[in-house]
Length: 276
Picture 1 (cartoon, rainbow, N blue to C red):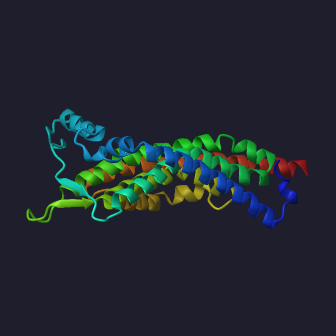
Picture 2 (cartoon, one colour):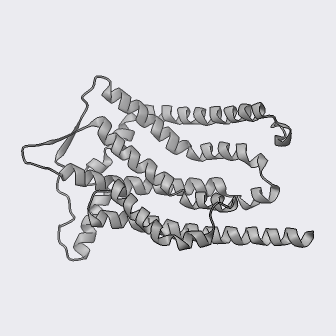
Picture 3 (cartoon, helix red, strand yellow):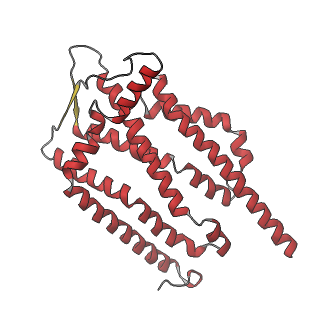
């Protein structure tokens, strides 16, 4: 049974946090073990999926190209690169860390649940009610971001970098760790970026940001989004636009959430003032 947070000392809070971290880590390890056993599916189907020319994203772009009368300009006939492992423990290390990454992604809802269990006792009853659905919404946004990173950012990056050459004398041989690092960064970065509405909600709750501030700085947000898109995608305008659009939509959704939260805060303050 959890202790009353009002009666807990600093060390008690640390002890409580330690057990939340232990349970979260245990969930990640268990799911990582499952992913470790399912090596063939994880690597052949998921990890190396964007390397295959029949990957859904490439088919979608090819069909889109034909629909707009561009012929086969966006169709892919080959991936002119190979993936190799140049260190003794390279493949085992990739297997281990990829399994941990898969475990973290699948266990994300439980990790958020443990985080919520730690912070919720310190909130007021009305704050806990207002934040109901936090685990579901944050998990949903994270998974949408992961899928976006996997089906959009990763294949666009791999296709561009895999076909990029400075000379016909150079053949692309990508190291296994470099390939997985690109996929990992694309997936995790997208997953965390899609948590923006949740972050804005809590920043508004504590008074750090306001809807007026977000609306006023929309042009700066546009520059940041375009810069971020240029960093995580290949340097071509089509890829940057494809990535920028969902991020701009997320920002607009965040403004709406901030307005809704800010109105509720003002209403609660008015009710408190009238009660006095």
